[in-house]
Length: 151
Image (cartoon, rainbow, N blue to C red; front, side):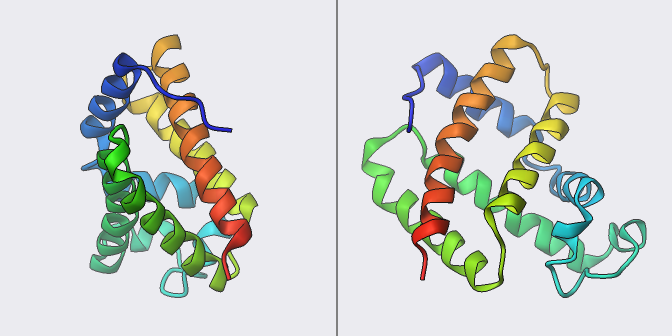
């Protein structure tokens, strides 16, 4: 189920994301480092040494796509008029990932690695943690539901 965020939580969520969203390469690196099974799902990165590809153009481009998706979703959250756009984005993500055999477990691993990254790069305290937990619970509720029903 989805729990609405307060205005303060929403503001903290968005402002804190804005402080890390330009660290695309570092975020994806952290996810891949913690989850080689996720890296293995990307044909252009599968079987390659993570440190040797981290500074490549391909890695930068793909990092930008992944983090950019989150930035787009986060930018739309909080305005009820944006719900159709959010649904379109999330349904597209679910459909494309299901077609590539990405399962719920990988999304959950991604989430855990993202939280770990954030906890080391934001002013992480109880308020920040609870805000991100709530926001990601809401986001992943929709993402995992869309993954479940995707064709």
